[in-house]
Structure formats: C-alpha cells, structure tokens
Length: 463
Image (tube, rainbow, N blue to C red):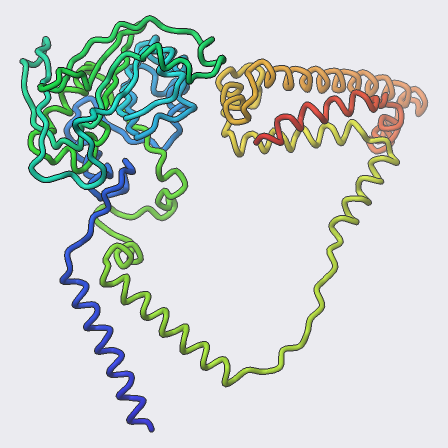
C-alpha cells in the first residue's frame, strides 16, 4: 500500500516537471492590446518607451500617475509639455481646460485616435480612419507606410517608413455635416478659431498625421498615431528619430506624461522594490510554465484538503448570530440630541464629516475652500455640479458657522461677566459656564436646519 502511494507521488512530480519543461520551451505569446501603461512590457505598453525617453530628453521626462485634468490645473506643471497617449480622449478633457493651460505658456501633446464631440466642435479638428489602411491587433509583416516630416528651422525634410498599423488615422477639420449628431449644449459651446499647421503627413495621400496650433504663449500638438509612442513603435526602424522630432516641436521644455492605467496598482511606497529586482509572484505569474505549475500545485493541495477534511469531519455546534444593536444605538443618540435641542451641534459635526470626506476623496490642498479656486474646481469636476453651485454651498455654510461662532462668543462673555458679579470676583467654573451657555444659546430653526442638511447632502451624495 505504501509503495503504491510513493509511486503515485513520484509519477505526479515527474508529470509536473514534464509540463514545466514543455511550457518553458514554448515561445512567449504577446498581448497586442493597447494599454499605454508604464508598467507593461507588452508591444503596445510603454515601459521601454518611458525608459528610453527618460534617458534621452535633456530637459527631463517624467511619468505621473495622475488624472490629466489635475495635471493641467496644477501650478506645478505650468509651462511644461504635458503628453497624453490614449485610444479614446477622456470626457473630462475639455477644450477650455486645455486652452487655459496652453495660454500661460504650456504645451499639450495629445496622441489619440478619437476624442469627444466637444473637442471636434470647439477646436475644429477631428480624426478619420484611412479606409485603404485598416489594421486591428498584431502588425502585418511587410506592410509599411511612408510619412514625411516637413523641413523646419531645426531639421531638414525627412521620410520615415512605419508599419501600416501605426498610422490608421489622419487629421482633418471637423465636418459641418457631423454637427447634426451633436447635442444642443455642445453646439452652443464656444468655438475657437485655431489655425492648424501640418508638420507630418502621409506621403501617398498627403494627409496630415501631426498638426500644431498656437494659442496664447503655448501651443497644442495633435497626433493621430498613439501607437507610435509605445514599446513596439519606438523600436521599429528609425521611429525614435521621428518621435524626437515631434517632441522637439514644443521647444526646450520638460515632458510630463499622464499615465492613469495603474492608478490603483502602484508599487508599495513603504517597501519599494530595488531596480533590477522582480517580485517572486510577478515572476511566477508572468512565466507561463511557472504559472501552470503554480496552479497545478494549488489544485493538488485543494484536492488533498477536500479528501482529508471529509475523513476527519466533526460535528460543528450551531452558533446563533449576534443581534445587531447599531440601529438602536443610532436611534438612542439621535433621541438624546433631540431632547437636549442640540441641533447646532449636529450641523457642525455633519459639516466636519463632510470636510473630512472631501479631503480624502478629492484630495483638496487647502482648508479654506472659499479662497481656493483650484479646490472648488476639483470638487465641481468630482461631483458633476457647476462651480457656482459648489461655491454657493460653502458660502452658506461659512455664513452659518461665522454667525454661530460670533453669537456664542458674545453670549459667553456676557454670562461670564454676570457669573463674576454673582460670585463676587470668584473664578468662574467652566462647567457651569458651558451648562448655562448651552441652555441660553438661540436654537436654529427647523427650516434653517433642513436647508443646511440638504446643501451638504448635495455634495456628499455625489462624492
């Protein structure tokens, strides 16, 4: 019996080793989906691209895991070159936000294949697919497209050869006939008369793929080839020279690339991984052979525990679930507040909780929100309310708190004077003072209380 068990274990181990060796000899299967992540080493990731750009850009190159609208609003990145690479331009990227950033001297490079209708209408610029050149997924070997970079003050004219899949789209002014698909709100949006200059175009069809437009002290650079700025794009032929030429259109500025793909999967800051090291689980899960062996081991352990637990199963006593007393506790606390008439205390505590939640979720930088336009803009963008609606809520709450504090200080001083006269100069006990102050403070009306609670709920329900 024991010899049979040993033989079974030996055969299982030999089988697992055979599977590991067989899978290790197989070629790696690449994933050809675009993700533009700085942590991805797949063809259309940006790990290698960001590494090469960091060592090649003399003015500096940085990848920031922050929302693109937060970068454009932050004074830290003012007068820098901000780069956004994506398949679909995000809805929170509005023309006014981009133009406000560019007007102060910044440069915005957007490499995408589609953006929302407000961009098309306001900036008079759009993307269209080249019907004679449609590719999806892995690039087709042997199919290439020539593009020409026009002569500039820094570089002479040069022709580059790219895979056809990297330039499926080209730039074109927005078609007035397309406006029938837009909503009335978008058509009412402000239309900016930007003059676009074409720098790079397809050699055969003469259709532009890179265009620039000046606005204020800065400029906008549009590129219809986002896959050029990937691991595959930068390693193909002499594409690196083309990328550096496109970047040089912004002049001598530090480049900041927005990468939101792994905002919630950053490495552990308290225990950073040293350069050149790889976590053991990442190494196992990224290697198909080790991944299969790992899953086989887990399956074997699961089967072992299932059979072992069935043999040693014991009677499990029934334990009654404990009653949930939280609701009764809340009712009791609410009843105490109601009996004591502490409606103002409820309002102040709810406002303190709202401010803590805003600071946690929106990451505001200032405690005085009324004097911080940037924080009000962030709250408006996060909740979907307008800037005036957000400012109205905090102005009403600030007026209420200031009035309450002023009334409390005046009444406190008056009671303190009366108690000192009553006790003939004896120091006033703070507990007695607070007790009388609580009884004589004017109570907030139910109408005002409901109004303040509704205003705060408009913010908290949308966080």
